[in-house]
Image 1 (cartoon, rainbow, N blue to C red):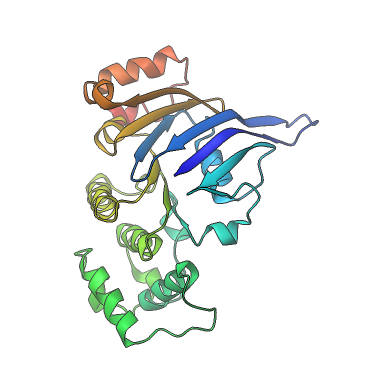
Image 2: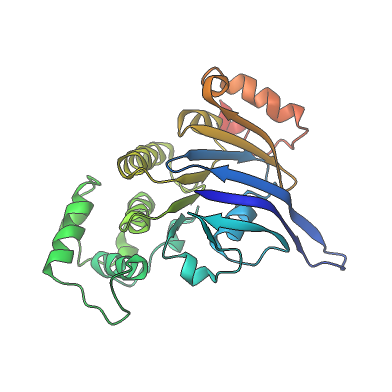
Length: 264
């Protein structure tokens, strides 16, 4: 499904600011895999997402999605098949546009059956309303309201819906609940799990929360210095506890950033 093979990326090469962000990294996801990613700040987690999404071209290596080589494909073309959410709720939506307009943009961008000049019809609006109702946030009755009036949790739930309105081949979740309060984050995570499972979406999720990393999905990887240093799956992952994984985190010599506070 997703095959990342020996990708590397160095920023500002040959200068005092040279930084190797990805180093010969390889990763293989099968259809329907839900992989959580842990690692210290600067481990290369978001850089990996940027490489997959096409924010830059890697220096070496290759990226294949569903059998197609997308290594040099522009990001706007990848966005038709790759959904993405960010930590900041403000990044996923256009605040001055209505809920309906945001959904329409997401639908037309990801759909293979519409042109940039397509119009949203009654059937599309009914579908938007039905999908919004499934969020159980009352947004289906506020389709003509500007998104800027929504709370952070509501915006992230809407962004999740936009990213999966047309089922993507791959969904990238970059700490998409980190800016939310614990109760709201729990709701968005539950919603994420349901949507991913119902649509059998292949998913990568960055998190600093160790319990979430172990409870969600079917695989967990740990990154350090632009490489994958550990992977958990199957029985080993099922038997892993927060305390044991935190100990492995220490054994890798990673810095004591905010991941430690999430383990309590």
